[in-house]
Each structure stands twice: as C-alpha cells, then as structure tokens.
Image (tube, rainbow, N blue to C red; front, side, top):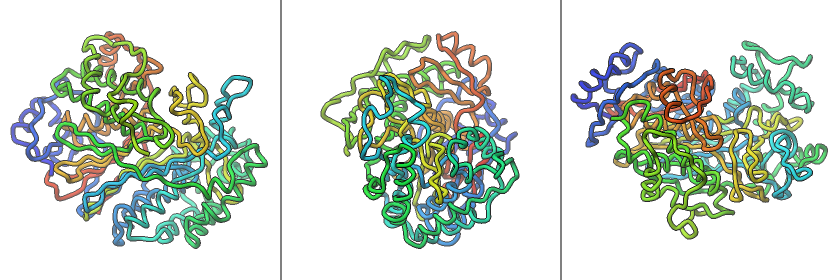
Length: 591
C-alpha cells in the first residue's frame, strides 16, 4: 500500500512538484511519492523539471493499460465478465493484432510475465525462433551482410510464438477459452475500425515496401494503391477468417493445421526457408524471472533471451550506489546515462539465447554492479572500451516495433506483456489468404560481427544466427513487489530504448517519488554504448542538454522516445491506477 508521510508532503511542497501535481490534476498529494509503509522517505529532488502529467484511470476491481483504446476496452470487458488478468491480457493482445497490427500480432512474438494470486511467478517466452534451415551467414552476400534481407521479405521472419504463449497462459492460468477471447477480435477485423493518426502514419511509411508484396497491398492499401487516412475504416476479412479458424480449431490450426502449408508455399515461391515443419516444431519456453531488489522493492523481470530484464536489473544495481534524489538533475541524468552505457557494453558481448549460449548470471550480481559503479566519474563522461567480466562468467549462467500492455485484477493476478513483430509491419509480408503480418525478427540476431541492426545495436557470437535459436530482445516487462505484494506492472515499446524507458520510469517513481502518470510523461534519454551518444527527447530542457554536453556527452535529439504503459496501486491500496503514455493514443481503463 502506497503512502505519503507528512514530512514528505512538506518536502514535496517546498520542491515545487506538489503545486505542479495539483495544477495538472494529479489524483491527490499522496500520489506524489510512491513509498510503502516502512520505507524511508527519499530526499526531495534537486532542481526537478516536470512535464504535464499523463491521464490516470482508477478502478477497484481491475485495470488495463495499452496503446490502443479499443484493445484496452476489450481487456476491461473480459474482466467485467469474470475473466482474470491473464484472460484480459490475451484479449488485449489479440485485439491489438487487429487494430495495432503494425506493432504486434500472431505473426510475431511476445514475452509474458505473470505474477499469480498465489504468489508464484512465471515468465512465458513466446519469442520467435530461427527456422531449421537458418545458418550463421544466411544474410551475407559476397562477404558483406545485407541488412535488407534481415529486415524485409522472405528471409526476415522467425517462427512466430505469440499465439503459442497466449494459448499456454490461458490453459494454465486463465478462466476463459481462446475461442471466447478471439471471436470479439475477429468481429472487429470483419467490420473494420477507424484508422487513427499513428496507424495512418505507419501505412504511409510502409507503402513503398508493400508494393513488393501483392498480398500486403491487398491487406493494407486501397485498390488504387493509396493509403488509408485518419478516420477511414480498415477492414481485414482474411485476418477475421484466420481468427475464426483459430476459434474453431484452437492454436493447432496455426501451428499444425492449414496455416503452416500456406506459409511454406509462399516462402518457397519467394526465396524463403520457413516450412510447415518449423511451425509444428515451435515451442514456448518457461523461464525463471530475473529478480533483484532496489530501494526496498523486489523487481521481477524477464530473463534471456530478453536483454531487458538483465540490464534493467544491472542498471538499477549500479544506480543503487548513488542517492539520485539528492543530486541536481544534470548529475542525475549523467549518472543514469553512464550506467546505461556500461550495461549496453555488456549486452553487446554476453547476451543471447540461454538455450544455446552461456549468459552469465553475474551480470545481475550486486558486487559486479559495485565494481561498475566505481567507473563512473560524476563530472565527466567516461569512455567504455568494451564489456566487463561478471563474477563466475563461465560457470554461473542462466538456465535454459513493439507494444506493451499491463493488466491487474482484484484477485491478485498481475500481467506485464510485451509483444512485437519488430519494426513497423514486420517483414512487410502478409501470408496470402490469412491476413497475418509476418515479423522481421531475424534482424535482432547479430547477422555479422560489427554490423548493426535496424536499431543500431551491435551483437557478438552469443547472438549469432543458428537453427532454432531465439534472437536477443530488449523487451522488458517488469513487475514490482513490496512485502510480497505486486504494486506496479510496466513495460515499454521502442527497440533498445525499452530498457531505458523502464529504468527511467522506475527511478522517477521509486527514487523521485512521482506518481505513475507523472513518471511516464517526463523527458527521456537513452545511451546504448554504441554509438557513443545520448539520445534525448526534445522536451528535455535546453539547460540540461547543455549541462550534459559540458560533461563530454554527444547528444542526439529526437522528437520522442518509445511508449510506456503502467498499472499500479493507489496510495491507500484500495484501488488500481493505470496510465498510458501520452506520446501515443493509448488509454488506461479500470472498473
């Protein structure tokens, strides 16, 4: 249960943040500091800049936050009909595959992190897998990697895993059937939905690429080849038929039925390697969540092949050596960026599929974080030449364009799920007659040493292409507990900036005392080691940018950075609070 001690209220008021919270309609002064009974009060932040708070929603029986209001409403309706958080999360996912299909869908993958009402936790790995015919140099032509092949077309797709993960989650932890949850989404696909500004923009960006694939043009462009504009109704009858086939025959239709031969036929005609056998052989992986403690809270995060959970934990372990709330804003931003840099250097070398490579558990070791923290100079940016050497790196290893949504129910089930087809509309391929957008997740492998992927990330041997291997991901679904009880579920979309977004949201809430709706709206920054620069949002104050530059940082300014969704508990513990990122058009809704 969150609380705000009287002395914290006084400190917050002196800082000016209290007046800002009231001005922007924060729920109450108590939401200014996210602390739990028994936690010490942090020092008031120095020179805090603030942004207008995002809209918050409240509910006593459950909460859903997603990137699209239609999907959010679908999840809430399932909760109202007696479903639990797992049911609602799957309904959200399946609906997003219709109304937000440029980001995610059953042709892609997901990481689903569940904290169950009985106190158990599970990480369901629905990440795509490389086809059996995949090879280390499959994207190399004349000795040089061709990123066009890994990002678009027949070779770009891994075997989809999202539907298998949703099916498993429902059977093991849900109350509703897959049929009950997918048919309403099929109806939306059949009757159509109004295209919003973000969807229209994604269609414009993909229009030229769609021209290479007749089935993609048929699915997402008008008969004359023009794009749907904001307010136009987009209907997807082929996807509706696919959803209804899944409703009638279960996930087997997708993995062992008619979908597999359709995929194989198209791939053979277009130079691809995925087969019906690849679909039949797909399997989810159940993994043990990464756990760490930060400022008196316990964090559950997703393990490899997610790099997100490992490096969110690693960055927070480094930051725990600094009193962030007592720092001026420039020093705080500098320290966080330096911690990100150290973690991403480790990511480039160590991270990969734990079923095929040895990923050191020592990356999240507190003593290793202490060693890294000593490398940070508070006054200057420090060059990082390469990865560190975590303790027992050879012996103690992990066992074998994106969207995020968070859901919680009154019974105590919490879900943080991040799903993706990778970049916008994935590989740009729609399997004819199915309406299914195929991912381009093969680009998340290190297709050749030293060659960056779409997001500018460099990988090493640990993330090289191999048959049946799962590519590395930055997806970072995270659940925060206090005294064994969930208090936050969050995650983000935005490639490698996902890791930074989750870290910043947690620092804003757990260190700086912001409510979820304030934390999610703050200016963001990101450092991924290579290239050696900080990417900052244009909303970051100019004086702060100048202060970072004075410390030796090279800055790159972007209009915005990623999309985060948060579900939490209100200060009195009696209600849920949810917020969707104001950078997108999503919503949070409770009941």
